[in-house]
Image: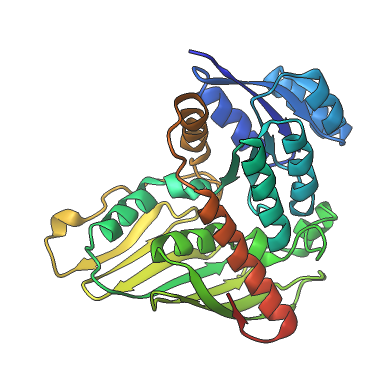
Length: 338
């Protein structure tokens, strides 16, 4: 079987998850090139992976024959990076968020469709056994009518976190806590709700950290099927990541998914037989979890076998639409209708 040639741009912290995931899928892909403008990051990545190193993305794309390139650069660079990759007729794998602008996200999707290429948006938690089990329960109708889907994201990020990387906390490059810390949760909520967005109203404030974006906020979401959503987010939890959870309130049952990477079922209450219980909780060693390896397997299945990917273009676009709607609502101090 042909192996996919993978490139990667942006060799910071999250890139390690990609290196490991690509290595774990060595039967279908291999990492042939890495790129970073930071000499230290690039040198470390080359040493770790044995891939060819480049300091300029255009040089990498012109020198290598690549099937897909993963974008692990700061949020505000995703759009330009993806445009350049698509210009070279190469598939895009991009860490969340797709972009910081809904219009730019739509543009990328149109470019990819015109060129017959894929944009794979990384929301690796969709592959978690816990998330998969709950999604199957939803698809089976185990909850009956869904009333609410809520999420609490109470994490700790001190001022040193923002000082170590100049882009963290910036409006132009980071985008804010909802986009950087909250996007995996809002994506799962969207997926579970199973319908188009109707509206969002959000309030965000900078109460403590020396940053341009919010460090606390709440958002109320409505989907067209009548489900109400609520997200409470703060990076001011006392000295630790306290909670990251999603709760579904349904006519026939209630489920809460917790853990530091949505890796534990903490509540499972149904009228029906307890055999439906998702006994699939597991431990993780970071907030990234272990979803990148099955994520890359899905990429290989799509590019090599033509299988549909778990995150459709519509999913990716709506995930971005909700994030941008939250930010827009905070900035304009009004409800955003979709």
